[in-house]
Structure formats: structure tokens, C-alpha cells
Image (cartoon, rainbow, N blue to C red):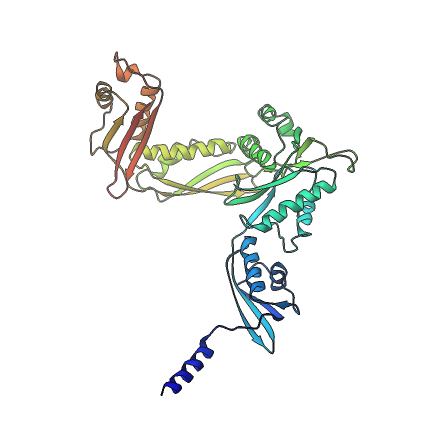
Length: 429
């Protein structure tokens, strides 16, 4: 009986034990499951394994560790099977998300040149990388070697940064050890060349360290509003170009002239707005609040201000969380624009309580006397804003002859959507 049990145990062990092979075996094939971006041959190249070579358990584990350290994979597992002293390995993988690559201060070379420099060492490189790992470090080293080959031995660093102009983040590479400067900036549109507002902004960036991100933010925040104000609602600025002259074989220049291509597009006229989802305020009231008339130049800044005025009008009657979703409808032939605005009004909030910190009891009493709303009243944000203005600019209208000392007033509105109430928090420092 005991012998029979031992035989059964041996059979079970052989059936369920993991596959094994001798000290080493010939690697026959490498496969991968779960790949989405990489191909199987690219994966094999990353592992360092090659068919026909002798491998052992340690070699397979080392290859798996290489994949983990690369940063390309969130999960790495592998299995193997042996047959006639040959081994077949299958990696089971989950790829990490990748970030778009940005070359921030490499003004001397195009993106395609820099991308190709990385691709020489990372053949799978597609202008995206994970947020960290050896492949990111290798890409930085590739860029440094490329710059050194052009007579500029520098270091190249990398950081994950928030994309200032779109959703998500960027894997940004930047040069350290050399500081190219923006020597000039020229626009490809004569309107901007002559526009006083645009020209007044140029000293903000001229002479500053060259940075693609800095230039992009400058164009979006300082120059694009000029077009918006003129009614060029679909104007396209950039991407900025570097236009260097001179012998490309000499040392890389540190003074960088910038040219910004511009496509202003047509100047649009305001046609009107259609409202949906509103009940607390009539469509006529909302249209009048925007203060734009058909035929007016569609000043983009005024349009945005109009949406803010609508939000303020809602907050005036207690709708503190009203949401607007304006969608433009362009008539490119007639150069007109109209909007469809969907509104989610949310709850109408009522005043609940006020909490005051950092103020004397006498001062707190005067603040409460200056606040006209009682608990349960419909909250009026306009009254709240007026109180803040009085406490910041016209203090005697609240505190009278009481000696008080504070520099700032921290202020918050704490809403409770479930109860449709709002608390005021004031903190004096």
C-alpha cells in the first residue's frame, strides 16, 4: 500500500511540477504575449536573448529583469518549455503607458534629426517613451552623443512635465551645460508685426533662455489673445521655427533667432447664441448678459467674458455650480460664428453659516453685522464679493473705527450639494 502511494505521489509531482531543464539548454524560440506597441522581434532584441545560444534559468530571469528595468512594462512574467534539450520561452507582458517626447532646448536640430539619433540605439523608438526606466536614460545618452558629434559635449536630462497646451504629460529632454538665448522673434503675419499689443509683449521673451515650452506658452498666452480680440477665432500660430545661418560645421550658436509661422484665418462676425438646459434664467436674459450683437466683430476675449458674466448671473441667484458648454458653429463662407451653449444649472444654494478665524471678537461681530443674509436665504455671490471688496479695500465700511491689523483675507465657499447649502469660511492673516 505504501509503495502504491509513493508511486501516485511521483506521478502527481511529474504532472504538476513546473517545467525544468538542465543547467543550460539551447534556446530555440522566444515568444511574447500582451504586446500592443512593440513587435515580438523588438521584444527579443530588448531581452538580449538570441536563438541558438545556451541559456539557463539565470539568463531567463536576467532577461525578465532587463524588461522590468526598461520602464516599458508594468508586468513581466515568463514561462518555458523544453523538448529534446531545446527551450522555448514565452514572456507574458503588460506594457506601460507612454508619453509623447518633447525636445525642449535643442534649437540647432529638427525633431526628425533628434528622433533618428535616438532610434539608432532604440530601433523601436516612435517619439514616445514611458515616464522612466533605462530606455529613457538611453535616449538621453543618445542625444548627448549626437550633440557631442557636432562639437558640443553637453549633458542631456529628462523630466516628466505637464503639457501646458493639451491634456496629459510629456517626457521632456533638455540640454544642460549650454544656455542658448532667444535673440529675436519674428511673426509671419504683417498684422502682428504692426500690432502694438503683440510688439509690446516681445521683450517678455527676447533675450530669455531658449525653451520650446516657454515659446509655446508665450504664443498661447500673449499672442493668441491678440488674434482672438481681432476676431481671428481660428488663427494658428507656430510651431515656432529656428532659422540659423552660417557654417553648420562650426560650434553650435548660442543666439537663436525665432520665426513664427502664422495663419490668421478670417475675421468672424457674431451671429448669435442658442441656449439649452436653462430654466432659472430665460434665454433672453442670458443673451443680454453676453452683450454681443449680431454683426459685431466676434472678439474672442469678449465672448469668454460673456460666458463668465452668465456664470456670475447664475451665482447671483444661488446657482454656484452652474456649468456651461459653449460649442462654436463656424460659417466659413459668410465668416460668421454662432454658439450652442448647453447649461447644467445644478442646485440652488442657500446660505448656512459663516466661520471666521484670525479676527478679534469685536471685529467678527462687525463682519456679521455687515453680512445681510440669514441662514436659509438664497445665496447671492455678488453680495459675498462686495463684502470681500469692502474688507480688502474699504475697511472702514465694515470695521468703522475699530483698530484692526491683517494683510490678507483667505476666503472659501464650502458647498454641500446634497443639502443645497453653502458655508462661508474667512481667515484673516
